[in-house]
Image 1: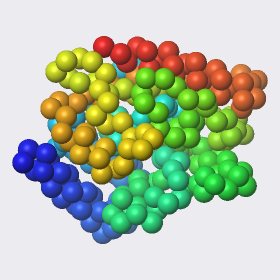
Image 2 (image 1 turned 120 degrees about the horizontal axis):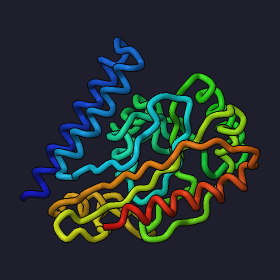
Image 3 (image 1 turned 90 degrees about the vertical axis):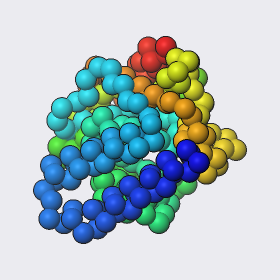
Length: 245
C-alpha cells in the first residue's frame, strides 16, 4: 500500500508537469523554465522519499558540459534536482507518452544511438547549444552500469566541448541506503532489469539517498577527445569512490 501510494502520487506529479510544460511553458522565460524543471524534480524526489545530498559545487552558468556515470533511469531526475541542464538522450524517449513531453520541455537533445552518422549531427547541435551558453549533460558510458564499477567512456560527444572551447565538469552519482548507509542497488536499471521492476524496487526502498559529487571544472588543455575521455573517466571514478559511505 505504501509503495502504491507513492507511485500514484508520482504519476499525478508527472501529469501536473506535463500540463505545466504544455500549457504554461510557452509563457515562461528560459530562466523560469529552468527553475520550474529543477523545482519539479526536487519535489518528485521528496514524494518518493529519496533524499538528495550534493557534494561540491555545480557549475553556476554555461556554457558547460556535465559528464557523469550512469546507473539508473533516476539519474536524470537527480541531476535536474541539483541544477537544470539539457541532457542528450536516445531518440526513442521523445515518443514515450508523458515522459517524452517532459523530456522535450526540459530541453533534451535527441540522438539516434544506432546511427553512427547521427553522432556527427549531435556534436554540431551540442556545439551550437554550448556556444549559446547552455549547460549540457551526457553519460559517456552510453548505457547504465551497476554503480560499483565504471564502463569505458565513449569520446565522440566530447568533441562538442572542444569545438566550442567550453569547460567540462565531471560528476559522479551513487545511491545509498539511508538506513544502513550502504550502497543500494534499489534504483539500478541494468542488464535484464525492466523499467517497471526498477521503479517498483526504487519505491519499495525504505529510505534512499542520492549522492551527487561534483568535481572541478576543466578545459581540454590540448587533449583530443579520446585522451580527454580517459582523463575524465579517471576523474569520475575518483568522485564516485568519494560518494561511498
